[in-house]
Image (tube, rainbow, N blue to C red; front, side, top):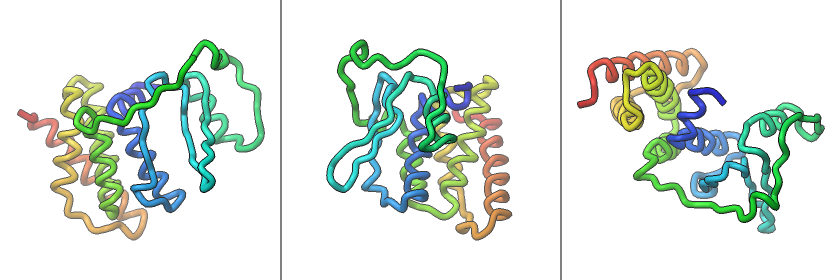
Length: 185
């Protein structure tokens, strides 16, 4: 998956960003979007329909299949590699996320509810914090602190056009880098 996505998965920021995406793509209110942690990583998505039926996309704990499906839609293209053996998997287990252990998910949900510039600030601060971790300049446990400080300091109005989004992104990246450079102690 790559280092950035691996860290976003470990902090559950990837799930937080997916919640924000679902709000925008499907027009769902926050309370209709639930995050469940599947430790085996075989369940890539699950949708509940109005009749209560669930439709899940399952596969190896690898993003190649979900990405292929996103690219090809209803067409099915062959994909080489191991197949998911449900008999070997056995039971599928899900857990509610612990927001104390995964503050990035909480911050993402709050930014999504706040709307406006908050999701832009969240993403930009996370990008810098993760890059700083990979560069050895930040501890894993400090990623959420950098993001929270940027969100707390943000006074940006809701962007109306792409140039405003890019300006907020750039400003937040500079701010996050300054927070990392100063240290968090």
